[in-house]
Length: 531
Image (cartoon, rainbow, N blue to C red; front, side, top):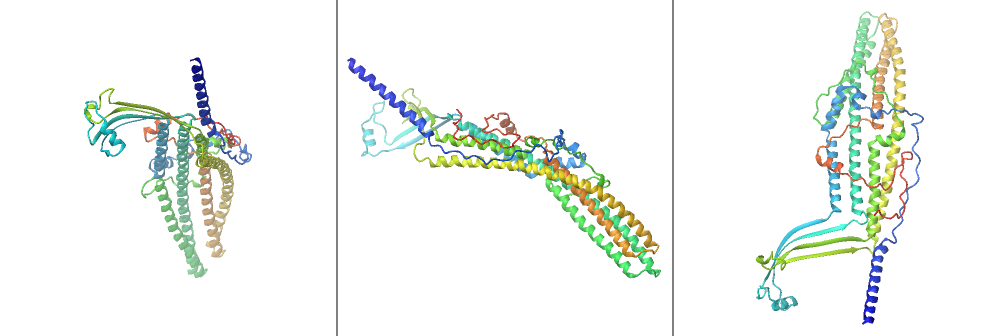
């Protein structure tokens, strides 16, 4: 008896040890042979200054009302934020990203379904099932009916236990992309503000060109009358008359072309604000040469990482891609799936809810892991690695582009500002030369050609000054945008956005971004998944 007991205990121990070994292999073997992650190429550090220029203040923090100081322009911008179709499309992208968070959030929670079923079955008597039914009797002592009905109502429970945080990492990745979608919308807002302002100042420049042409035509018409009078007094010829007349007609024709340009720019603004073509209200072109916007302050280059929505969007995408690697890595490890069901089943509805006779239930737990032919899992893992590298390089490219934009546009503002001052001095000299030439021509002390050339040079100088001023204003607006300015707080059009944002999980980021280098460190190869 003692021997039997001792043998039985020894057998149980062997079974326990064997079971433990099998489960250990199930847990350990799938984690072996995971491919090595590829590291990114090294990159340069973000410079500490904008070519030596830095300031404590940053113009990006200035609101559009203060920066532009033009109620008409800010009114157009407000219309653009509510009527622009591209922003409405992006709002739907935000809704899609929000829905993705809700879907991922539900994936790691238990699933419970409830339902019913009714069926009818007639097995063949010459089959094992039919022959067995022929010998069976129901609880009432009668044979089961043929054909046999079946009625079922039950609730089923299924839950994949998130051992390796795979499902929660997928949720957190969606949350990062949701935030990235918001930042992408914010970047479009800053570009929309800049485009509306740039087109608005373009309209002022075109109005000034019309005003300049009117002044030039009036001056040339006076010279034309003098040429006619000199011809009648036999002090001039028909050649001078025709040359002045041709110059007048040229500028009158140019006015029509400018009016067409005004219509096109107005309609460009109408398109940006989401309305059909109509005249655009604007300030007077008087004082256009002396029009100044808010002073520009660049701040520090590292401020771009916080102020530029496109950089923040790339950063969110980089964080999401790092979480995607953890999601793909978890596919190498076992999955624990729990399932259960409870309900009632009977061949007659009057027996359906008898307890415990018609009660059915079951509980099961599945532990599954890939063992052979894991190429598909490896491919997904390496694809996630490649996408993370793409996101990293895109982040670096976005930072480089933002830094370059600030350098180019600040330089353009400075050079065009200096050019305007020089052109103003040129304009003063040309105005004096036209005045002198006109007086000499009226007194028949110079030829018409000198007056004609002087007037033409003055007109061209005025037009060039207008174009230069327009480019300067455009450069200031674009510098404001390049620094991250022009962002308007986004009011969520749907409460579900706010719900998703308020319940946003705070995932552990796979990598941390260094503001100095603007490059996240390389991911650690084969790091264990977060428990």
